[in-house]
Length: 146
Length: 137
Picture 1 (cartoon, rainbow over the protein chains, first blue to last red):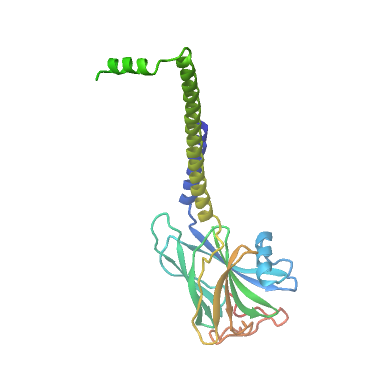
Picture 2 (picture 1 turned 60 degrees about the horizontal axis):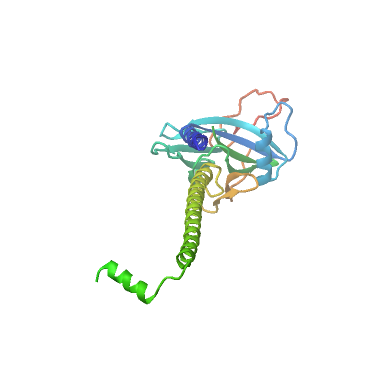
C-alpha cells in the first residue's frame, strides 16, 4: 500500500514537473516545399518533420530557407522576416503562471496582411502555415515550441 | 404480571418437551452463523467496491491529466482572412500530428524584384552567377 502511494506521488510529481517546464521559445522556420531535389548544400527538414510536412502538403523535399526564434516571455510583437514579400508578425499574449501561452500571429504577403489568428504552442505539435506558391513549390512557415 | 409468573404459566400451559430447547438453540445458532457470514461478506464486498471506486477515480484523474497534457487532437490554432479573395482556415491534421493553417488565394511569391525594393539590382553584378532571389533576406 505504501509503495502504491509513493508511485502515485511520483506520477503526480512528474506531471507537476512537466507542467512547470513550459515552453519558453518558439522556433519559426520558412521551408520551401518542392518535388525537385534541393542542392546538396541545402539544409532540409529533419526526418520526423519531413514526414509530417509530407503528410499535409505532399511534396517530396522540404528545404529550410530561414529560421528564427521568438521568446514567449516577451510580451511584445516580434517579427520573423525570411523574405521581403512573405513574413510573419508574432506577439505572445500575457498569461497566468501555469497556463499555456498564447501567440497572436499576422501573416503578410507583399506588405499587406492576408491572415491572422492565434496559436497555442505545444511541444510536439507544430503549426504549419501554408504560404504562397514559389517557383515549382510552395513556401511553408513551421512554428515549433521548444 | 411478573416475568416469573408468566414463565410459570407458560410452563403449565405449554410444557417444554425433552430436547426441544436443544433443537431450538441449534436452529437459532445456524441462523446466527449464516447472518454472520452474510455480514462479513457484505463488509468484504463493500471494502472491495470502495477500493475499486477509489482506483477508478484515480485512474480517471490521471487519464484526464494525461489527455490534457498530450498533443490534443483539437484545434490549437485559429485563422481569419484579412484580405479580399483570401480564404484562411485552421485544422488539426491527425496523420501529421500538427496544427495547420491553410490559406488560399495568395498570389505566388516571386523571385523577381518586388516593388518594396526596386534598387536591389547592383550595377556590375556577375551575370555568370545564378541569379539570387532578390526577395530572400
